[in-house]
Amino acid sequence: MSRKRSDDPRVLISVDALQRRIRELAEEIDRDHAEVDRIVAVGVLKGSVFFLVDLLQHLKTPVAIDFFQTSSYGSGTTSGEVRIRKDVDLSLRGQHVLLIEDIVDTGYTLRTILDLMRFRGAASVKLCTLLDKPSSREVEVPIDYCGFSIENLFVVGFGLDFAERYRNLPYIGVYDGDVDD
Ligand code: 5GP
Image 1 (cartoon, rainbow, N blue to C red):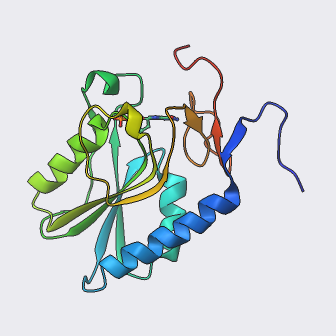
Image 2: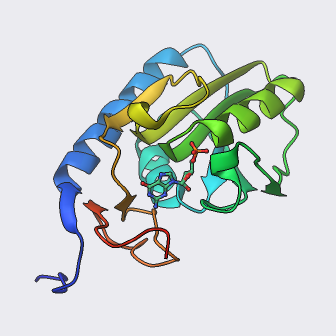
């Protein structure tokens, strides 16, 4: 059965490649947290949701789940100004936090969130991103787990949107339209 529509973006990372890499990342995270009682997984809304669900299903380490939301792409992140829309509900003091993000671009969003988690007294903060666009980086962010490093393309699918479209594509595709529309 094919769910493909004629105007679907071209495939950059296939469903199989995504699933294979996500399983590998979960194994890596489990290995690094073998001595830890629990991880607090913090997903950055909304783009990380598909990745978070798949990743955590493969994780053997016990997890608590929470979410964080910042202002969306195009409304401040490129200037380095990141607004918090939704904060975590759990206390992070003394916790081992695993931040789960869809994509690191300029780095402003993650830099802001990482600093905040540390300020809240987390015992450790590790960053896991599905995608990384290293050529667009403007501020340094330490990435502990990275699914795929990609060129400076605007990508959609597997949680990532363009104006709320394409999030439910099961693969990562390249959006060829004008993103400044
Ligand atoms: P940064 O603060 O690193 O510049 O931006 C991170 C956020 O920008 C991501 O969480 C995501 O929401 C958005 N973003 C950056 N690059 C892309 C992209 O190629 N496609 C989509 N859909 N969003 C992106």
